[in-house]
Length: 120
Image (cartoon, rainbow, N blue to C red; front, side, top):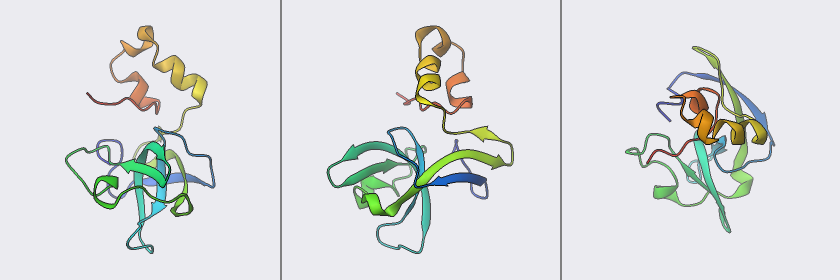
């Protein structure tokens, strides 16, 4: 999940929280269910959530194991606590505001406040 998260980061997770595209989520790996994984929810599909890594060259995500069933998605990451606090779950209103053309011109502002910005 680099650059958003790195190994060893401590996270605050809201288990059972509603998931929406762009949210960072915690889920049980589909093939090794004792393993908890953190990825970004890209889209909702008929068979479950399509989850992708923020680090695109890494393909250990839905590109290799497909959509993750709803029952394996445990919750939404709200905040990275350590090494330095970063909010990862802004409300919809704040996210829409951060993505307006005027605020989108401020480099890195949306990402620093947790809005998901697709890299092109």
